[in-house]
Length: 175
Image (cartoon, rainbow, N blue to C red; front, top):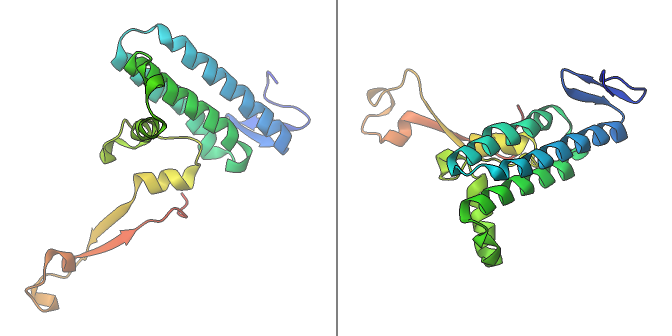
């Protein structure tokens, strides 16, 4: 597998292409590598640096595969990596006290870690959901100005809501 080519598949620009079993094997190997590397970051004492390395380095390693590989082939491995990263953030951020939390509080903390920044979270978005959900999390609602229409052209006295057309993207959007 050193050159990225085998009888069952090959890697094209880092993306596994081939039979399902071969793709799963390659993604599982990559997930194990990321999980091992997340554990190596525990020696870092600076909380901000630890969080940034998890967010921008470890989480991003699997995000590339998530954008370019069919979701059913990798969702179980992505969920393992997501759980490992969230656990590392909680463990490092609380000094291990998160183990004493109630299940309800722990679910809330996990959600807060995985919610995007603009919605008040830590921004370590989960890789397990695939591209459509990431699109939904990042583009929830969009208001577009109506070009060429001002208050006088459509009856005047209209409120701000009449100047915009609102579009809401649902979870079935694709990129």
